[in-house]
Image 1 (cartoon, rainbow, N blue to C red):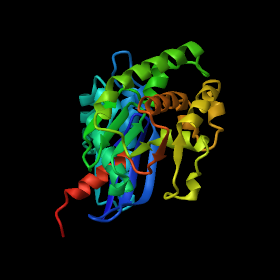
Image 2: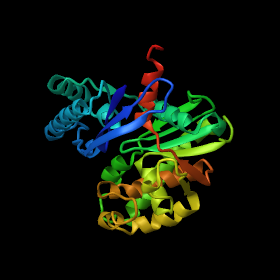
Image 3: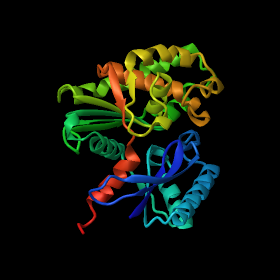
Image 4: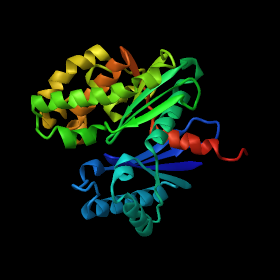
Length: 310
């Protein structure tokens, strides 16, 4: 069957079309995305303004039309931290449903962490042992750990690259003082939850998912996306530590010229690097492996798990 996952995230609205069947590996068929940056459209009261909601409605409507054109049988729509934390989130959901017919399911931060963990577990398999999974989104950082398909521990922290850039790094390039303050805050937030994970023991395999980790790995020397989905890609903490001060001295335009860095995400890359560096350091991770699957694949896998056997 052909399924679509409609992900209303903090950075983008992304429709991922996949050919999927219970017991089989989901195969990507088409990808449609639009950058909205909802996390940066919140007003002083934490609400998504009228212009932002208008854009969201139009984007969701366009994604539904694409899904129909691509022969999608069922669309699995969900929203993450930007809508979840907006003060007018319920109103936004009602308007999207009324004007597009799409009823967005709002995932909790823990849901995000658990579904991303499921995707990583299915990708690497049981032989990977105990997994520690880190996922940096636009609005939040998810961390999950476990031996099975359900993690033993899962948390979500308000440390997304888009959120932090908008709130804490206003300059281009940002001021050194702002970078130091953000680095301190990020490390303090992550340090509060480290013991919730380390009490389960040392992970056998550490995994990074999301665009931020992929871009950081690429500039640190990992293989290009053109070399294929199954090419192993890693991010070394020492290489990352060397890149952080370089990124701090660059403008967004200069970062966009780095290998694998898109113009739309270049402004957020420094904040993402600070979160990645802090997470790897505080969890004692020297190297992590990039997982091609993340939250969207986790949503599809969980949906397939609940379908009746044929």
